[in-house]
Image (cartoon, rainbow, N blue to C red; front, side, top):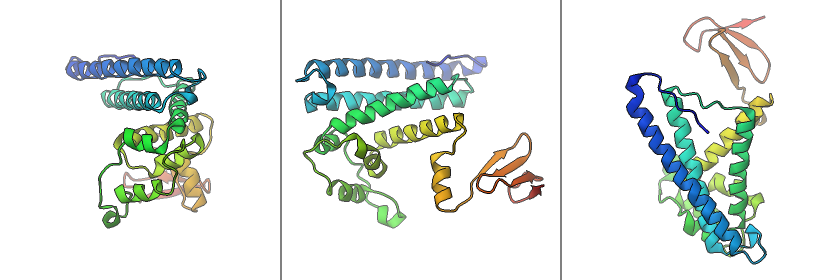
Length: 234
């Protein structure tokens, strides 16, 4: 999936570190495939949705760890300046993989979901005006603990759910969606959100020296390295 290229001899230590990360990813990949096959074999109908909850928990946990491991590799390769040769097809494949993991999450009961991914115990959300343990508890208390969550509710739940692994996976899902939208010439999720709030966003082309207002279409020439010094291009 990723071609490692040693840029300079000084990168050897970092490259070896990345290779170890890839080995860890492969381990979770094998675990994910094995748990998936076990779940299907134990299913009452041969379909994953009818697998025992214990097996579904193992499938989802392995999938989440696999996604997080791959995300770590992407970020390390970017730091090293290694080209991961991303294309629309690869981005779409990655999106579909994460989306499939979300679908399987929907087969889990909320009770088992919380057991598999415990709520992060941070309690200062009110002080910092952010989501915390209490916020997540309030969200899940309004849901049925014994019923399958459902794919249609997973995205909303993950948006409110405080867990480091799930936070990383949801972030990857959003970035992947945005990448696919950019490939198709569409606005990103954040741009659409800002448009609804009537907050302008900008696209900066540092190489050509201009800044585009995505809402109005106005082009501002960057005449100084400081972002406040802009000139309207007519």
